[in-house]
Length: 446
Ligand SMILES: Nc1nc2c(c(=O)[nH]1)N[C@H]1C(S)=C(S)[C@@H](COP(=O)(O)O)O[C@H]1N2
Ligand SMILES: [Mo]
Image (cartoon, rainbow, N blue to C red; front, side, top):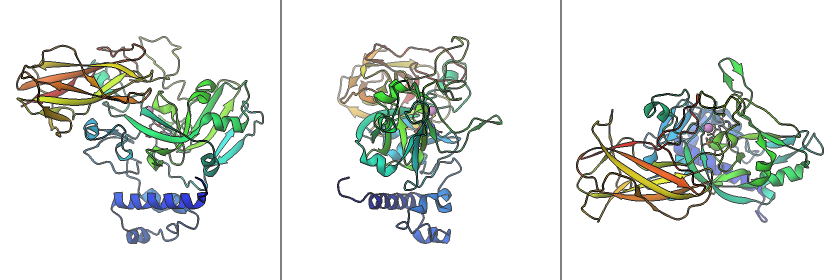
């Protein structure tokens, strides 16, 4: 930050955020004042806006603050899934306003100026630990990392629709994923300053959002232990997303980023981190986020890395123009590393998709000059574009000449750098985690 006063900096950022929220929600300052926000709007005097009743008035019934336009999002209870066609005219990153939201309860609105991060526990030389303000963290060495964020339940609906064994929980299609550029301080730096002992084994970050009540049982705040080795390796305490201050829905003022791992590891609205010299447990690494089911051993370990997956930047199902060679676009990603290969299989099918079919924007299926010969059924290589970093995604395209009007299913299959390749089906697990089989994407050609 150089010589800029950090309090001024945060005030300016908060003002920017307020303006943005006002714009997004179509409220004037006058309307805000009528809502009784006069005091709260005195941003310069302490930045109390984000704690004010006005701030919570921004929350929608979903508990999500940002707007969720229908062209970009599908609402699933307290969550919002990104529709993949929203990525068709985008660059490499997912814009913050299109990024999926997964909340166990509701977005917590926190005053970044009063907030502190507590670090404590038996794994520290002094177990009472210490706390850090956002200003403290911003003064520490920062890193910028590009990573995907993906929910372990992404693709869950296909256990039902493709394999005939529905799993309970949010019926995500493939849109519980996004890639962003995260900036913050490596968790390692904070643990070192807190005096971590070499005998420490687990690190448990915990969120400041409401306690989670499941079937009448209070499970406490969202928290999930992370092995010390991963914490010291590449975990990041992020305060910026795509070059902007983290927004409320994504964990403002600070969230953890655990590269390549199931999204639940990346705790939002971080309030504290326990460091222990004994293994730690929470519902999020014991009863949940493990593979439980007939095909898995009873003691299968907590989920860590996401599997390899692919998606087309098309509506589901999509209507495509006939008589043309179409350049289709998609993206593939894996928690194991970069993507080695992507193949596409177009298959003619007799049954039309059920329900409405959606017109496709030209950016998603661009007519191109190409051979007039129809693409034969079978696996064909897609063309990968740079960049292709680890634990983010790679963009690809595939030129398809449909043999004629009719119904088709498109499948994309990626292979990652470890050789893991998307299968045609995956074994069922009771909670529907890690669906990584190829997904049949229905399209109709006119
Ligand atoms: N405190 C807290 N952190 C959380 C969650 C939550 O509900 N509370 N949801 C987790 C889950 S399950 C996922 S998939 C990611 C989603 O991050 P996003 O909403 O920024 O996309 O946040 C994780 N971190
Ligand atoms: Mo998740």
